[in-house]
Length: 430
Ligand code: PMP
View 1 (cartoon, rainbow, N blue to C red):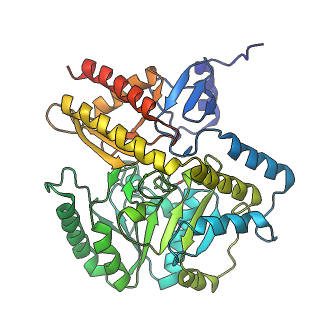
View 2: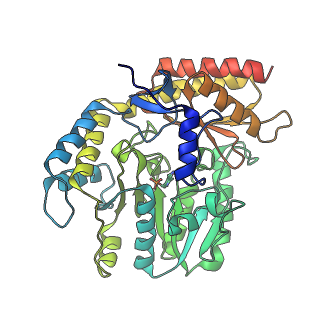
């Protein structure tokens, strides 16, 4: 017999009764999801959606191999790091192999936010300093520490404002900087940042940045920016943190980790989102030196961090990425999709910039006057939803469409997305 689902209006009413309004719902017409598989999601009305933006499901929604790994381990053993069990060791060894040798200690947690929190604690314990240098429009997590270092949240109209301990650095965004080449933009922003850091020479605990700033509108840090900044931070005794929560695990195609694309090696790396393909796992990877200093403090314990079920799932994710060659697919499909989007850009002036690498892409929109294309981006997102294609918007003015699909997303899917965007643009931007 067919399953009878409550109506959308009923669900919204129930939601408003029990959930806080600080939680938002996507799209003007919210979707009641029921099921998902690989690059598809299915709603309660029987519609199939092509998912072009749920980056967490890197290895494909509900991948059967990953689901089975979780089910089997959950049925056998679930406990914590105060016992010895193989899953945490096999997984940690395997994950650490993907990093440069200096990054050889791992802390397993349950979210990107808890990883950020610990990364900041590790930095502060290492050098006994307080100040954190952050990029404008960055986001790193929902804890008190996370929000406090996330310009994207604290600078919001309703935000807490910049904490005393934070040093803000302009986002090194090549597009719109006035510099025609990426390298000159990087040098300009690095010089500016170094001048801003100068007054705090003996006070900086850490510098934190995403390799491509997601919430800022999928902005790759300009070329050589990190190469210029990292030595300056280290010279002063500070720690360099790379937040790989969004970009990690092969999504970038040419690189497994985002810091590789900038030619640097961080002291601390933050992981989350796709690490468990939807199951809540996060991690901090760091050097022996930083970990040793932290060991002089109280014991670190997380009830769920590093439990065997999460580790088995994490291991299965790594196996799927490798066996199914997902990193290479991200590169091939990503290159193809960018090419197709650039063709659209040559037809429609409102596509101001197409950027990103692999399957981590941003399309920035502008209006007729060259200002941020906020309304246009929103209309495109909502009309794509009506055509059963999922994308999201972000950026300082919500003027950027974000494309970061499960890595099962293929060339045909890229064509479907671009054809739908073409149809919408022909109506919206005649
Ligand atoms: N860092 C970055 C760059 C993120 O995008 C996010 C989540 N959007 C986080 C940290 C926090 O992760 P979580 O929501 O899993 O706590």
